[in-house]
Structures are given as C-alpha cells and as structure tokens.
Image (cartoon, rainbow, N blue to C red):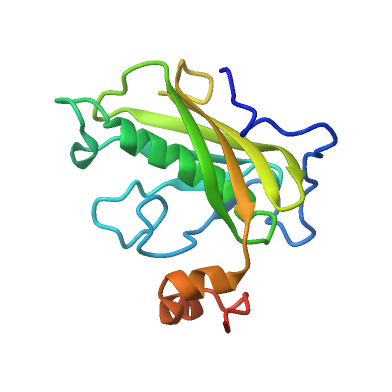
Length: 184
C-alpha cells in the first residue's frame, strides 16, 4: 500500500506502549457507544464488530458482511468496508485512553467481499507525534491469515471530551462514559 505523507509517521514518531490501564492480552473490547454503526450492539444494521486486543496496543476483530451491507448485488459496499477499517483503527487508539477522531482514512480495496464473508480485521499504530496518531489496518477473508481484501492507513487526531459534548449528545456521552470528564 502506498501511503500519503498525511498517513505516514514523521521521523521520530514513536509507536505507543500499552497504557497501564489497557485491557490484558486477549481481552474482549466492548462497544464505545451502543448505537455506534461499527461496534454498537444496539444498532440494527451495524457492523457489530467483535473485537479484542492481543497485547494492549493492537486490535483484532471479526465482521460478517450481511444483506444490509451490500453495494453491488451480493457484494459488500466499499463504504461499509471503509467504515469497518475506521472502526477497528478507532478501537486501537481507544486503548490509549485518550479520545481521538479520524482526520484522514485511505482505503485500498484489494479483493471483492461477498455477502456472508467473515472479514478478520487487525489494526495497529505506527507512531504518535503530538496529537497525531498514524495507524494501519487490514481485513482478511475467512481467516486471520486469509487473503487480504482491504487495507487502510489513517491519521487520527487527539481531541478532548468537550469535542463530543459540543458536537454530539452530552447526555448520551455521560450515560455511557462515566470514566471520562465530559463537562464542557
């Protein structure tokens, strides 16, 4: 994958160490918001990513392409695949216990993904420089070592929780994130 300079870490950017409060290796990761299209268990047509961390810094997840995720007949919609990449990457920065938002997402579609296919996703951080995190992800068909169907590179920007309070639903944030201070 050829990445732009916007998703390539600058010299000196360091891959993060596991946060002291990161979940232990092998831990399942819950939804960050119940109505999230990517990981929310309460979203009726969402991706319902089933994610875990093998080491406190990377994320692995599975997502099965359903009927609601079609673009061309019986094939996953490219935007849905990009959403899956964005979600698994977002879950990996969530492990650092700081709120981030997507600044840029570059997605390469390598193989078509039929409805009914389970994609095995993996995301990792290549480096952090100030408020910028440089990340990558891949989605493999059928197994963690299956053929690569989709790849992504991303730039995520660290924000404060006021960002979500100002632009989102403060009551929903407070209800689902008691571990963050959300008073604007």
